[in-house]
Length: 463
Image 1 (cartoon, helix red, strand yellow):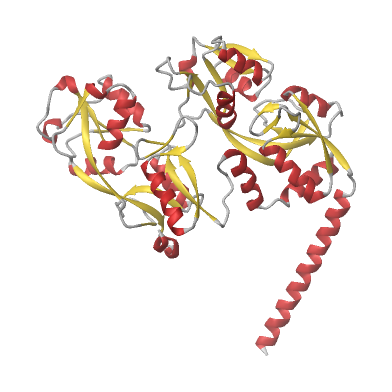
Image 2: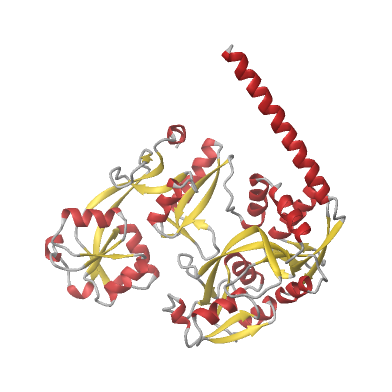
């Protein structure tokens, strides 16, 4: 009797679900049917998101998302390529129905209503390679900063660095032409857009950026004029018909990575600044020994993988715990420190040592550092090890490796503890190789493993 009742409930649920879906489909068809075609204003020079190619065709990741929206809804799109501000003004004046991607900023007065996200990005400052010492926004004082007029970058600088000397350009081509003529040495741009245009104008070897230090993150939205409720709802419902797999495929085509997690791809969290083991290179690609190991692992297992950059070790762990990533690409084997994380078999061993200024001379052992302030990255195994095994040594926490090394160079700390391979790579990159010594013997040798949620036993076994 109970079994019959359960079957009846199940069948009733299916019928109700089918009716609901049918009702939604009819409602959506009625909504989409109100629009045979719409005009969408878009930027004409912001690759790889949206731009006009040599043949006059509009292309890019955001363009492909809108084209897929058009396929889902049956609504044709007429493209109106223009500059950022001019495109917004077209929508406000009724000369265009929608704006392809709007990035709102604080205190902005706009006629646009942001409907649904079409992408996320980070903004960086870029500077010429012959300039050193630029670590933060405040370090840009004294430089003429290149920006596109009316952009979110201009709004950000005017708020956060009001005394900055700005050089405004009507569009990206004019800005990058000025960079090529060496009229500007510092500029702001989105991550992918900046790298794409530096390569296009053959300037990629002249400029650098710190991939670990984005200024801020932004979200871009499909937008329509406020009050256009029917079109706003058509945009929202149509964009929601695009699946995660479809969105990810578009992002991977244009950006070589996706912010959308899909079932067929394993996401591996990788540190952005742990040379030579794992890091993001000057072209924005994940590189190093560990990523190469994972690429080989993907070939052997037949699994698709994608890397998710993390600015700190702690962020990398959080990516796994909150399921933004499936795997941490390389952790020291310390089960007690990472609650809820299961470890693979070790795939690499590395020694840890303390590095100190060569002006102190050679030291025979760690005992000579008693009472000395020693730097460590916050939340790392090295920090915990030093506090536990040598409580007589004050440990000073730092968020970044470069900040820690600079403090040791300036004499603010007596030295720093680090995986030897990472320290040697950093010191070489900063031109400080001959200025530091290390203890004659490594403090300990750690084993690097992959990290996976303990509850995911199937994935842990596969790894």
